[in-house]
Image (cartoon, rainbow, N blue to C red; front, side, top):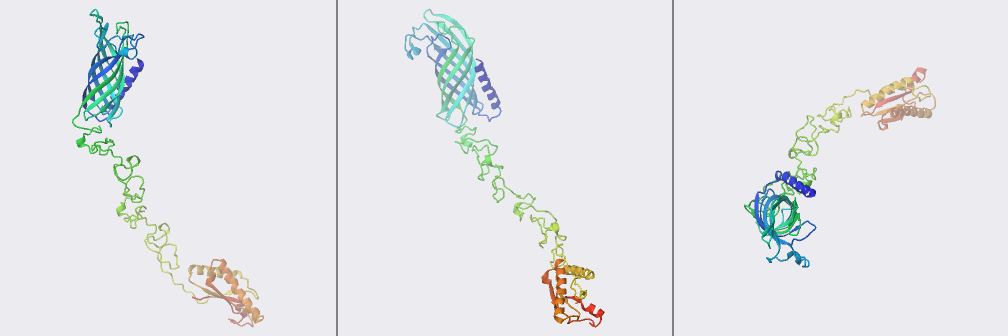
Length: 460
């Protein structure tokens, strides 16, 4: 009994919740049924299987949930224990000489749940309550053995409907009703039954304004897909068609991040199902964006074209390092790394730079020579287009062959210093002049000191 009540309450609560959440179907139905019924549920088993006829009235709140009220009339008689199975359960259907007859009047209010509504075959379950009115007569004496009785019913059952027509359905089901508070003889032989088992076959007529083949609540005359139920997904739910791809972009809605907006297939994130009107999200629509996949940098230079301008003036120096980002560097060898256009200043250099002097018979650079050479290094670095000739000279002491070699070593010592300090060797030419180019007489110590020198001459 507790199990029966629990199942009934679960179905009732599910019904109550769904009535208000689903689209209403608003269909009435009427039906008639015939059943083979048997009273069961006591240790004794005297009642035979007998017919029970009835009518029902139903109302569909939704395609799946409905309520039905049914009323039936039937009777039961004792079976003949001498007959073999199954005949003994059907004895004396037309025999007026049976001893007792139990008259039954079941009245039920049931809730019905359809497992599916889109096919001709619609399986369902029912649960409900009601009342069984009955009395037991003694046919031999003509007296009433058990007077009018009534018992509360709790009913569970299941079955299926077959819609062979737009409005007509064949209804087949098996139902069991529990009789609560029953403690009376229902057969005439002290058979205190407390259950009623029915096998039903019925015919139902559905009052529908017009045909709805797929039973989605949209009649065929208004249903663009009368044989496919609407999926009710919030997109064109009134046309009657299920939309597995609402925006028709080839991506099923279940995988489409924008099911109601078609993918634009512009080569940018084309697998998400969303149109990307501004791929780089720089506020400039792709149709007007020259660089749709690169965001504009809004640096004040051509900000309406949609392209980031990492080198506005296209001089090869990125704007972040360019002191003049909107003016191209002139690349003239003068301050070419600052990004600014500039005019190379004209350097006024005498043809002969300051001489470097050496001790007698030496080619090692002295301290005062290093000071001069450091100035020369700076000049050559500032003016990269200057090439120089380094000429070595000697006094007349010694053989001319020795002095020639000494002059070359003096020139090379200056060249090596310049190279060590970052001046390219291709800008330096060396020559040894020996004792051929004196600038002072060699017959005095002072004159010879002036002749022991290296000259630096600009050659371009």
